[in-house]
Image (tube, rainbow, N blue to C red; front, top):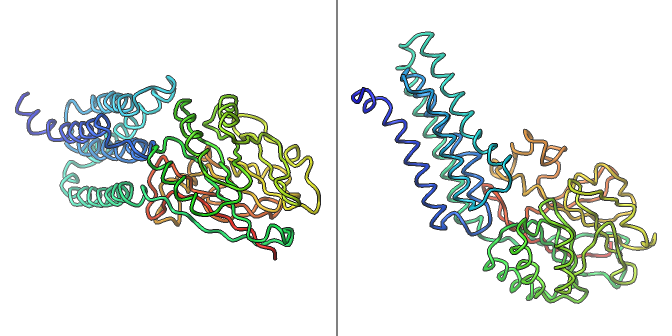
Length: 393
């Protein structure tokens, strides 16, 4: 049995053990920290499922007698990684969900390997080249994302957006707005870099599009730091699906920020700013938020989740700013985001609100920011702070 273990099981179990041990070490040492959950969640959605799936196929092809223990082992190991790297458990349910992330690929991989073995054991020799090719492709894809995560994903893009509208009055022509969204667990160093950069832009208005942080202490620190941005007309914000609105709004008011919750107000003559509650957690109402606006006003609406613009009337709005989709998280060079296609729990509208310009159901322009504290790296798509300049058309 010991010889069998050395020749068959140890190499494949060893691959999993080594890679997951490295991930654990990175998590404990802080290498996987920095910009929030960027690399941590990528590990669970890509690296660990890929490892367990491929190793499962190989074990199945080898027809190793202890192969069926592999899904359980990888599941336990991944649960341990989840707890150690995140350094807490959100709830019991997500913990079990992460257990199944490696468990199911390992089980499916074993099934594929065993199926091929049962058809004809000689096929296993022919598949060695295919497996090598898949491993090389997987390694290259992961390497591209990791390199991006450690380089471009740490560089915040200050994207300049010009918006022309006949409703922009002559007094608002050239009005400068900074839109920040989805800061999540972005480091204090990066937050201060945003403050310092924006304080050089001579801004008229700053808006936070929600998802400050799911952790109260981090949220409070984020609000405190962002409150140092200098503007002519103040700093405003809405809640996101990861925010606890009662605590958030109290913290915002304590630091001189104004929360918007199905409400709006006139910032200047003929300029009305409105914001809605989060679509997932509460009851957003665009119509309530627009109460008090006048037909001649330029109306800017802030909605964390852009899906609301496909479900409610937006005809009284000139421009909508949103976040939430994180630019599709993992994309193929910024062109297509499979995460938004195959997981409707983020958005019900596929690629429509990945990032950049889109339209509501009524044809109102919607700009979706990728956010600044992303959960996953996206090839060649940096985190963003949006700088909107209004021009009279």
